[in-house]
Image (cartoon, rainbow, N blue to C red; front, side):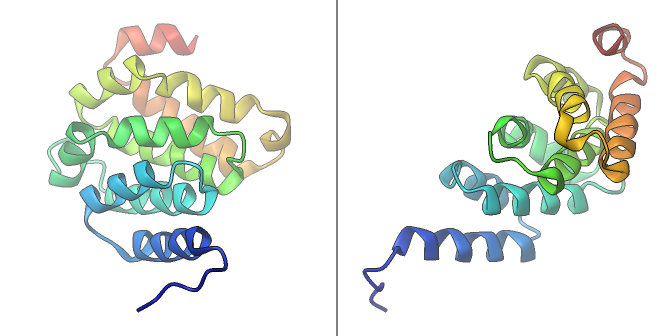
Length: 157
């Protein structure tokens, strides 16, 4: 079909966000997050989907391994660092990073890519300090990141 001349990019973002929300394909989610870096809607949908797909917190889960290997950690950290990143994105980003930390290699990658700092920044941001769900999720993420990782525990301190 022919795209309407009025904001095809916005239509593309909305469609991408919708597809990301419904997808169980971690590679598709990560690609969409990369393609629509400036779209808070796509970034939020991506973090929420990655959170759901890693909820088992099993370090050998194929989703956790694939997300770690295919740039998913970087995508989440980048999304959390965006100026327009709202509370839902931050909470889902914290949860995703905490879940991904179930794998030791991901724990290292999360630290190397600024994930520990991203979680702490989300928790410290004035506009998010009064949001219990985000604070709780951030605490859980930091706990997962510190578990069996002296280096991460020291960074968190």
